[in-house]
Length: 256
Image 1 (spheres, one colour):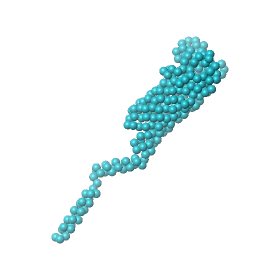
Image 2: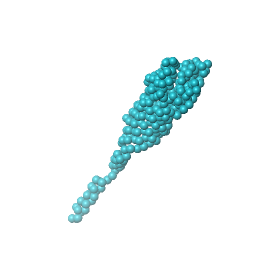
Image 3: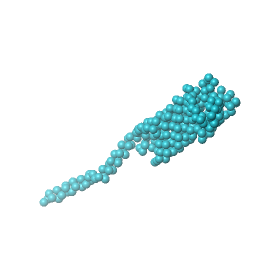
Image 4: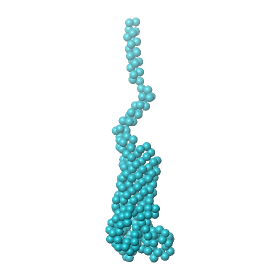
């Protein structure tokens, strides 16, 4: 009987120790959350790959009319032929693919490197003219569209440029809001012109008269994937020997 208190004490000690070390489901959940937090703390950088977004739909304009060289002489005869009407000049671009680097525990910051296709057009101030190579020269020259197409009614005259480029963009996520800023370097791949009505299209061989390299700064904000953006051209749209006019673009961004 003298051993009974000792045995009872040992049993109680074992029960207390077991209770102290018992793992219950709620403890497992806490441990899982703690483990996930630790994993995220040590894995602050992740990557992803996107296709076909974002897209930009915008209006463009030349910020000024400057004429150099041969265009300066033409301006004295023809008047201002470069247009500044933002409502008549448009831009569409598509980031065909993007490789993204995400930073921070909640992936708050993203650095994206993309491949972009851009279509931009610029209207002429005097729609009775078309800007095209003429007179046996590659020089872009304002030519009377009515002479080439007698039925032309002077409704609209534009030049178009296609670019391929690489944007580098930093994005900041705040809940469903995205704020971004970046820069793009692009090369000209095609240039052409168009006037109507009736509709007449023509190629501008080799993109003569255009600046073959285009660089822009860009920023924007979106909510739930839909937002607005603006971009400023750091380089002239046309060959600097003809004009120093740069572009400004404002519009809608989808899929940011």
